[in-house]
Length: 260
Ligand code: PT1
Image (tube, rainbow, N blue to C red; front, side):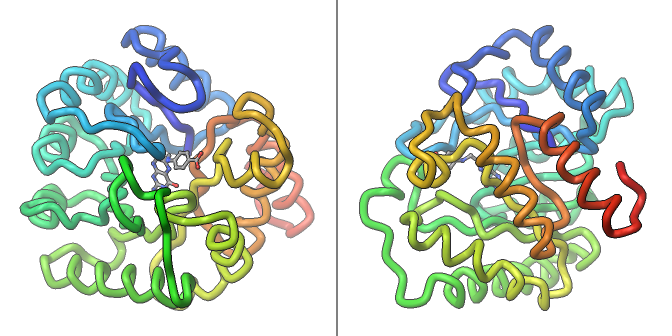
């Protein structure tokens, strides 16, 4: 999954793709480089970011969604707002990627009625303050219990199990130690009968490990993505599609699987 931020304040590319035309070109480039899904976000959710309203979010993403769906690209939308979900589904997206795991009123209904896939992600707190003081007794069991509960709620709302994906939410209300524990024990999320997705790309946890600034985290990001895949992740949300795709091709070749 290639990341396409259409936000003036996105954390790693400084809003480079603010114009729809540039965004569309960048998305097509990521597909050529090996992305199977393009994840479009109109609201930054990195630590410390501020929310935008639904109308603004829709204005930012809709021209790009329409163009990419028109080019038969598989589009995911990174949003927590039911209004944005409904508009995106109407425009033909295949997946809703929700960092709030469809907890907003009407979010479960929007996805159930739309018949699309949903990624349910764990977050402790809110983007504006989540890194202030993350606390867990046991981060792995607590994140897993939360995701299990959200999977049950989604199924009860009429979303089939085959339409669900889970994500432990690296960097969302977690210290470096929490993130490392989750990555070390990623395999324990595989018994929920739902594919696992992770987003580690360019995140500060990698900067804390390597000392690299955000523009110098490609190698660490590729290592982290491959590690996650080796531990069973099925979708990796990344900025550096070519580098990640090449690493996965090597892994697949060794495992006797189709390389791309
Ligand atoms: C993610 C994810 C996401 N991450 C899903 N969606 C972001 N499903 C946006 C940092 O510490 O992991 N999974 N949508 C980006 N969020 C962050 C969080 C960016 C932390 C940066 C950091 O640097």
